[in-house]
Image (cartoon, rainbow, N blue to C red; front, top):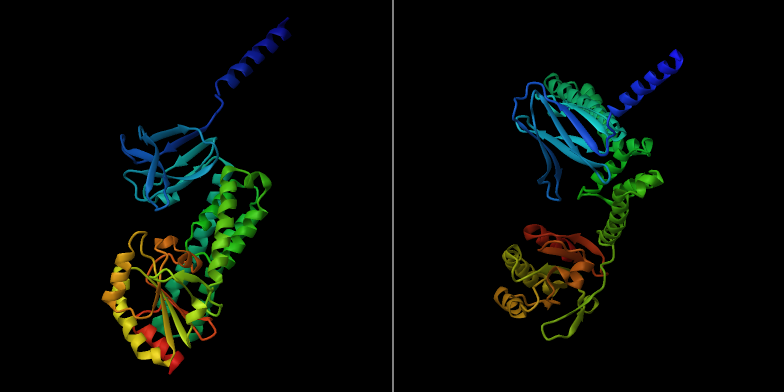
Length: 383
């Protein structure tokens, strides 16, 4: 009988203990903020496409503590900030318990515990910091050595700095490769895709990294979005590379003012300028006198120009008036479709003025030259 009572008591105690630990059906962020006054607000934020803050949740510090609760459809990189503390702390929000200890003197040195993704984020951040510290120290030594004027020592330091820079460039790719099962690797891929200066080679490395991630990660909502973005960016970059210097300029036809089509091949000279502009474009109009001067000076030597206007629909009169006012006596065409102009899209025009300079064979020899640089290039090709 005593044994039965003991078993019953232990069962009740065990059941009570389990019941006192509520199951987390979302994220629970418990923050410690030593030295932060009561009433100070803390925020969870995301960044929009322009880098502006969007507040997702707010908590108030009380007795140096704060708490966020919520639920995520899938993990995501957010930022935690404290009103009286400078900067933002990157944190991966996922449906688990997360503990944050705020360092009010340097929020980047705050501690985050909870979730495999945050563990990976901490590890990656530490590796970045270590390399950054090494580079800072090497640069400090280099500055000191400038006074000592020891060329060998400076050479060694510069080599060391180059090696550190190389490691920093390769770090994200190596990290993703070595952490193919971690959601932070997916976030890291996404962050790199936001770089507007991606070249095709870097994009290929990012795509390789993405394909190395496990299938579950690639099938998440973020994974699907990244896959679509990779397809779009690959198409864009391949299109851009087709317009590199040394490549054959794409052929096109576009309507003149009278509606007749004019083809690029019909007007090519020894040198041809494709000039993208518009009547509404102030910088274009200010550059036109320089282009007129160059045309008048070199037309008899074989220079041809075709002006492709990105004027808006219904504004043909403004286009023609600008041609007359600016004395643009060369070939002029326009579909009057603004930046949706087929020729502008073919040449990947995102802003104007923009120019392509072609040789007699239609090969691109220069791009986006203005003023004295444009004239110098034309003179080099025709004199």
